[in-house]
Length: 136
Image 1 (cartoon, rainbow, N blue to C red):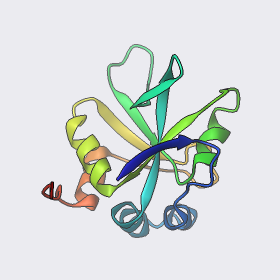
Image 2: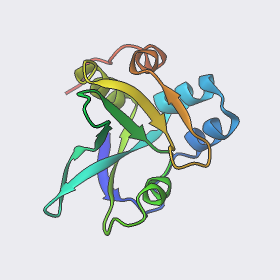
Image 3: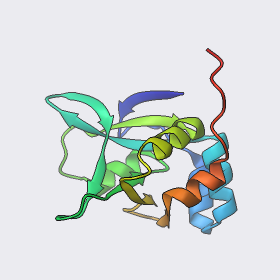
Image 4: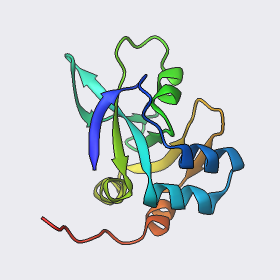
């Protein structure tokens, strides 16, 4: 499950927000497996077609920023006119982390607050469990 929406919408994961507020690693993993997570999208020429990742200058490694709500993402980038996000589930996150495992060095949750957490992609993959077979 995934869909694109405005970052300022009411789309959120209360389970993830609560787990982050408690800094409870097990609850974060549970929320990621059973609820949604908000991923920022890169908007180019008015179209949001790929997940936005961030990098340090001079490094080919990237950081994935995920959020418990679109509002938390919008708070991080207050000057962007039309921030877009994707609402995704744990299956999507497993697949994304697997595909990009060679370039992602860290994942941050709610980096603009109020409760920031970080995890190594490999640790998240272990917490999410195996990729489920497609039912298509």
